[in-house]
Length: 398
Ligand SMILES: Cc1cc2nc3c(=O)[nH]c(=O)nc-3n(C[C@H](O)[C@H](O)[C@H](O)COP(=O)(O)OP(=O)(O)OC[C@H]3O[C@@H](n4cnc5c(N)ncnc54)[C@H](O)[C@@H]3O)c2cc1C
Image 1 (cartoon, helix red, strand yellow):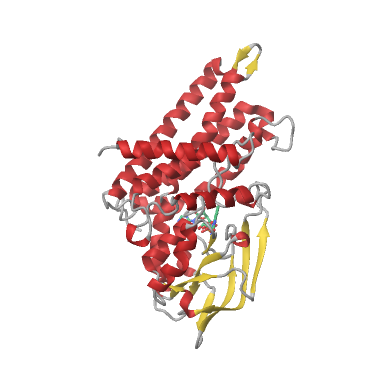
Image 2 (cartoon, rainbow, N blue to C red; image 1 turned 60 degrees about the horizontal axis):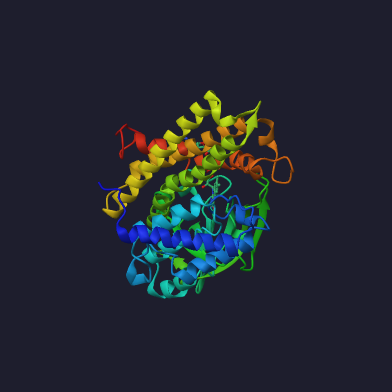
């Protein structure tokens, strides 16, 4: 195992940093403290146009889908893809979009016609995608989903409801999981996946306010929605294969969570250096020093776990187990960074960005609330522990 970067990769990191510097100069406001990766904070009115512009600039650089195979117009370079993500996430640059993930699915399971119809627009940074998996009674037990898709002569007709579909109200497309065979002998056998235009007639979208105050989550109601047959992704009733691939990608979010937490942590360290109580910088307080040092270890451990997973991926090794471990660990570390930040900021921590007394732009308060989601999104920590306990890990009977 070798974690060292090649000269070419180091040069690429420099190029990415130059790009980010340019984005800071030309796109982002001067007091920018960063946003969490993903579409949630893009629902902020002031962030959305910035994210769209960054996404477009990434497309113009040819950096969207850097990890995609070369034969599909990607960069074919997983290491560079991770360098790019790491830098963007750490700097809190908006525009990290799940379209890349949905692009992965289209490349893996789509027809040639679908690849040429959907992939170029993703690669140019022109379109946004959402994910339509969860339902009011279906989350961890995804294969129990109930949204019905009935085949007709020229289309499928969808009826039912989805929930927690992040950013679908701003998306151009949504990859939706539906039941096409209600009589299948096993529930995972009757599922199919569709690429759906969220503006189709019969779709009603209602935003839900989250505890962060954002309205990124949506309830989506399907009432006789007609989806062309050409938009079926993968084979009918074989949606399980697509789902397993999607779960595998979501499991790798551990490192995403950690690089994001690293930014909040470094801002906190800086705050401790610059903030004085009783004539002494906070950074001289032995308890604070101790807690920060402990936190630094945990972040380092998590990032090293993530780098190992990237290396294993590059060697075509199975990463289910370490990915589950790192996602659980990353969520825990992110939540600990936020808790520590709130303790150090004291009552200031409760103030949001609108208060003139807010410290660190009110971001630690946001992190404290938003980091709760990391142990749920993309598969809960309990479900990941089940995987670790089961056949991929400890071999315990289920
Ligand atoms: C930030 C965020 C973004 C999201 N974005 C999307 C999106 O874009 N599209 C989408 O479709 N969904 C999205 N989701 C929903 C997400 O996929 C679900 O929240 C997740 O799958 C868990 O499902 P649930 O909320 O229904 O909880 P449930 O599955 O009902 O679980 C409730 C609790 O019971 C535990 N539990 C359940 N089953 C077991 C078991 N077998 N063993 C042990 N414990 C168990 C869980 O761990 C959890 O603690 C998002 C969620 C979050 C937090």
